[in-house]
Length: 329
Image 1 (cartoon, rainbow, N blue to C red):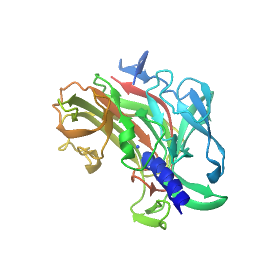
Image 2: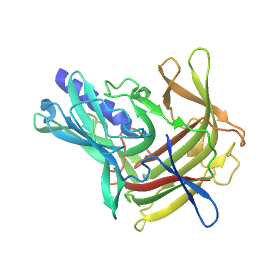
Image 3: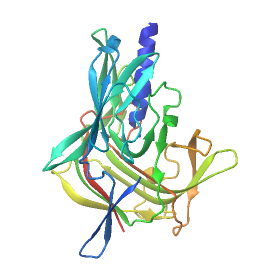
């Protein structure tokens, strides 16, 4: 029972992650004279591969974890930090609790034409103990700007191990990317945490993209606060008919609560996110209100996710393909 508990803790630590830069110099002028700037590695053509050996008690398999970074292969159970200056992290992560190593893999490179794209999946992950399926957990795929402190060591506030967002001081007009989505048609979602029985959650799942521009500051005690400068949230509730290229979504500035495009899921402090303060501590980002629409941001949050429901909730089979992520000015 004690070993089962350790495995469960390790698995829960991983799955809580699955609910959650620098720009390249390339600038492209369009016919309308707009300026388009690509994110570093935003064309999804370069991937670093990690080879992780999971603990023998849960099968001892070799798992491949994929990260968006300069091409490389890293062998061994080594904690990963963003390589090659990449601003991107994924929900592919390694946990180590009570000596048990477990991984999650829900983001994959996939061929697209002569290059690559990212494929994010919502999956029913299974843990085998001594060859028997023991634990099943819903896990969503996520690609985001930020960092993760690996390995994940427990379930106590695992979000504090994530550094959400990157320094950013510009004011783009829109986010642009190519995408394809497959959304499961069921009118309910699955909730599966591992030990408790599977249940259903009312409401259809959706695939989501979130971009927030924030103006952050730190007080003398190391607490971090921010106001929201810019907002873009897009959800997909229906499957697309193949690839949609150059999808462009405007970024709304200032207090948008009176804007016709405003939705409740765009509200302030919609979920808790963390950063590292000047003391090197992981602290929550307290989003306290809307900034003036003419304010200059200090940070950008950008996340692509295959299910929006939070930890352990989603629709297995949801799939989100993304490519060529850019900003429009």
